[in-house]
Image 1 (tube, rainbow, N blue to C red):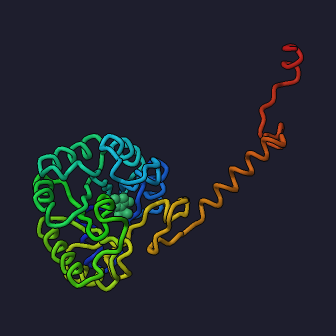
Image 2 (cartoon, rainbow, N blue to C red; image 1 turned 90 degrees about the horizontal axis):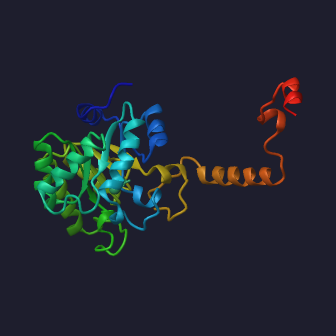
Image 3 (cartoon, rainbow, N blue to C red; image 1 turned 120 degrees about the vertical axis):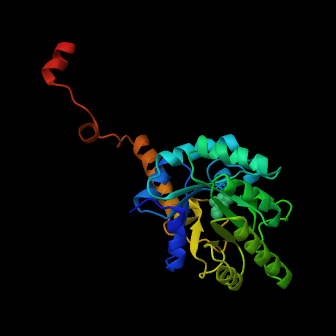
Amino acid sequence: PKKTTIARIADLRASNIPISVLTAYDFPTARACSAHPVDITLVGDSLAQVCLGYPSTTRLSLDEMLHHCRAVARGTSTPLLVADMPFGTYAPGPTDAVRAAVRLVHQGHVEAVKLEGGEEIIPHISALTQIGIPVMAHIGLLPQRSTALSGYRVQGRTAASANALVRAARALENAGAFAIVLEAMPSQLGEYITRTLTIPTIGIGAGPATSGQVLVWDDMLGTWHGHKAKFVRHFADVRKEVERGVATYVHAVKDRSFPNAEREGYAIDPTEWASFL
Ligand code: KIV
Ligand code: NA
């Protein structure tokens, strides 16, 4: 497979081939995304919860994000590499957004950035795209605002809210976003926004008609112990395998069945051993 470019993402949408996006937070997950290649690897700020144990993405710093981006970049070959801009790194204004995004490119080795928000971040997106940093937009459920929004709720369930999301999606496309994540909204609205726009939509809980899908690595593999949102499907039960492995290992150490002297041990030539003794 060839390196995913921005043009390739547009081509997939034009050809009606669904775009696969998966998050990664470290070198091995990046390698897995590259080996069975997804189109886009996203260093999501879900990193905060699923890898670092924070209660919310708002706790994640830019330095923490950069540390993980570098590890993911080292394991990434063909997928387009996108990183979330952490909470607070772009809201102050377009200049701050450019400064933080340039660090993500320089020091995090990512190719594009993702920002949560609607019309209020149009100037930020314009500033980034003008200097050549591709931007993925993100509307609907905005985890960075979950406190202000009183939790993680499905968006666009009233006519007024659906209207606001359609307006935001159009404005973000016009500002130059190359794609847009639609999170937690009715399937009908996901389809409507996808038909309204020319850029690809990447859905998570936005129904089957979006141009692509994204899931969090730990949700997709079932490694995660937390709440399972309705839109999550487990494509493996890694948690069960991990539990089985750890418990079996501990048991084998305790009953001395691990290691086996022959199978898992090294030997010394008997005459060498005799002269040592
Ligand atoms: O942080 C994240 O993982 C995300 C995706 C789920 C879209 O933003
Ligand atoms: Na995110």
